[in-house]
Image 1: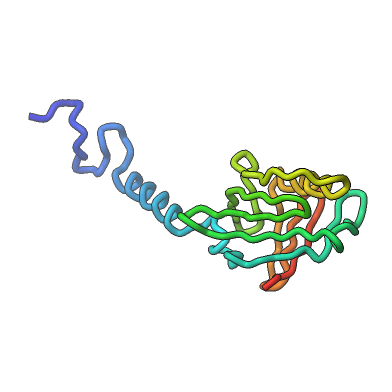
Image 2: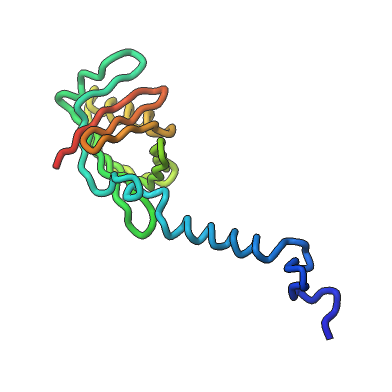
Length: 162
């Protein structure tokens, strides 16, 4: 015989806690659909496995002329349901989880792996500039050929390398 603590649904479709069973099912399905769709992956936004090379950039002080001789390379991939950014600044390299939304690229710098390499100034300073830029979410625009990443710290304009 069932007691008051029995977790079976009543005829009204409400479990003993008061949450309609359909809402629970819809919530579970929504979470599952978001997880398998890769909505935060580069692939979902047409940015998967494309090699980009900087053609220009700016920061609050003006144009980044050093990019002409020391370009930054950027590639995002989707593997195992998570996006990854592989970034090669002028001196070293880094790899980090990345999430892409409709208008933002967010690099998880807390889980970033950085290639350990010393570079003399000013080249080492260019890497520091990039690290400073990607610490904050980046607005992006992508037209199929040109990728622009920007925030209040600066902007980078990339073209497809391939």
